Length: 220
Image (cartoon, rainbow, N blue to C red; front, side, top):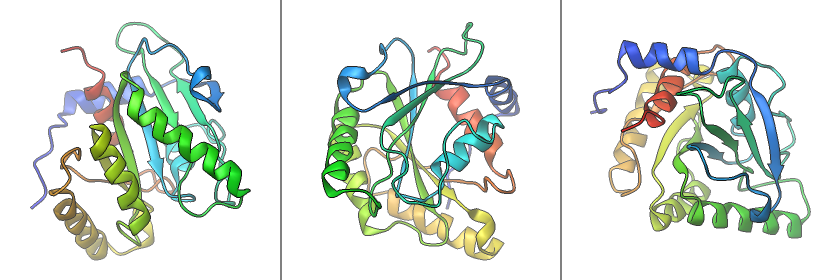
């Protein structure tokens, strides 16, 4: 059984306000020495190449070209940082688009470099509040996803699964893969139990992702 959501109408409204306006690209980070100061919460998006990270980010901020999208796996090769336009109280945060893992049409040395960057980032970024691990709803958790899950567990980095491309399968199949994913995550110590389902193309589930981000950056 899926866990009861903690996302109240107030949080959903906060999430809508948080993501309103024209978000800004801050910088691409090819190495840890280029990271911005860790002076605010960070929410990172990870997933296999071509799982739809950039498309989801663009849908969340309602901007078509903020994060670069491509049909070529491995297009994102740096940690790409984004921030809200208004950085007043309650809006200090970064969203981080991480390089896709798994198959990538890039030189092996380049893949090795950005894989090392991702591992170092996950192990040492204190300001990282949660990683959203994107899983294609048509395929579920694959062996290559389990590698990053193991790293997240080892690094004690809280992560939450977002199923992408939920419009590509039937409602019944989506319910089955959501339940199966939640069940599989019960054995993962760093996993947040609630699985979110989205479609960037149809703009479904975006309100719950926004609300989750709003919840994560609320002061204790």
